[in-house]
Image (tube, rainbow, N blue to C red):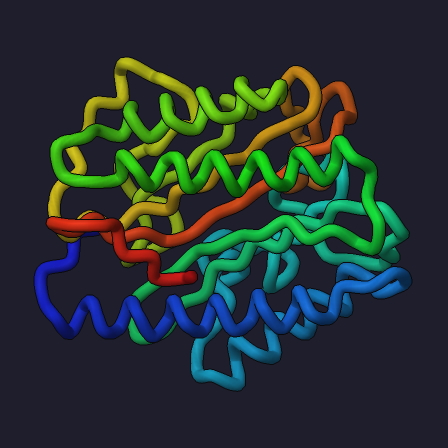
Length: 246
C-alpha cells in the first residue's frame, strides 16, 4: 500500500509499535530450555493485550501466532515443543494487525554463547538491512534494495536465499511490490513517497537454497546450514526511510 493520509500513517505507527513491543518481550524471554510454543504464547499475549491480533493465523491459517525458526530453519517455523539450546539461533518473525493495518518485523536472537560463524551471520543480516536503507529512498527501485543486500551478504562470505524476500505490506501481510534480496533486473518498481514495504534480508551460511518441509510451512536451508533473518516495515519518504517497527 501507499500512505495517503495522516490517519493511515498514525494507524501504521500504532501497529508498528505493538509489533516492536511483542518482539522485544519475546527476545528478553529467550533462554536455554524455553520452548518455541512458550515464546509464541508470550508474543501473542503482548499483541492481544494491546488490542491487536496475530496476522499469519488470521490471513493464512498458520498454526501459531509467531513464526519461530531455529538454526537451519530459515522462515515460517511452526511453534511447538522444541526447547532452545545453548548456541542456537532463533528467528522471531511477527506480523500483527489492528484497525485494518498490518506491520511485519523479524529478528534473529542468539541463545547464550554462539559460534563465531553464527555470530557473524546475525551481524551480516543486520548490516545488509542497513545497507538497504541507504537506497530505500525516492529515485531508487526495488532492484537497488536487492543489490545492496546481496553485495553486503557476499562481502561477508554468505549467501542470500533468493526464493525468500521482502514485499509490500500495510493492508494485509503480503502485497506488491516484490522486494528481492538480490539484484533482480525485472523488479523495477520505483520507490514512491508513502510506499510501505517490508525489507528483510534472509541469509544462509551455505548455498542459500531452501526446502519446504512436510509441515508445509517451515523452510529449511537445503544443506542444513545456519540462517539469519532481520526485518522492518519501512515507509518511503522524501528524506530518510521511516521504520515503523524499530
